[in-house]
Length: 366
Image (cartoon, rainbow, N blue to C red):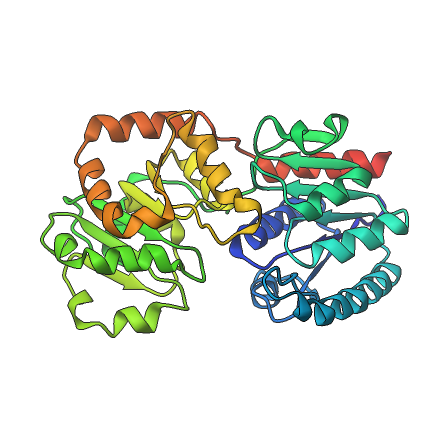
């Protein structure tokens, strides 16, 4: 059998990187001899996370457009031109059979170069609302793997495959993991637990909402695991009132499997990767969509769940006042938690990474 060579391009956030690594792992599980190269953006999270997962990566000097200060885009366009040249050289040297784009700055120049060179491409669109780059790249993509129905609004119908978003392989909740998680986070297994995650970098609104309601949290009979994100950890950890018995604070959760296992309710941004994990696990969730993302896609992601009564959503601007009271009321309502859990579980699309590898193999055979 001929050795399979694959380039996976994209990154910028955990929401792009975790699916990319899941796809790489699924390729390796099926084709051990496969050679996989990642192409990311210099100085972004993928340059650290991808090598830690055991894969080589090349960084492009690409950056996003500055929509507020147009003059700064002169430098952005120069970086884009340099990235296109480097992407072409990488493709020429590596000679991939297929190039996969998972979203993020680097996927644009890499997939555009692949299309120009006649190398087949596959797009993995995580959100319910497609971004500008993917809409442009979709015209020449052999396949577009999506996680939501109705994506023919953005993409050619004949290229679409509903696969779901790949999630981390260790995500399974068991009673044993719940016990292990209680020990790991120093929790009382008899009490209800709310998991608060704002993404690996953190979410200012969510953090400020908890700080604004600290007294209410401390006086409650509910435990909180609070992932602040690396940008906000020091600022929050230094505030002495936070050192409460029922709050476990951390910059980053290394064992998300344990955190999910102990969580009775989750508070989160509405990133596509996180939502896919909540669906697979059937976890009740309050979503606080970030208003600071392209095309406001997190609000659309949240709406896709809310319309099916599979999640509760609260606008960013209302969170400081309403988020914690809403969470404390919801966690005490067993019947509502069961409804949300059952409805979000119906939206799960398991084995997404394997389904994407099926499509990769079909492209190569053609």
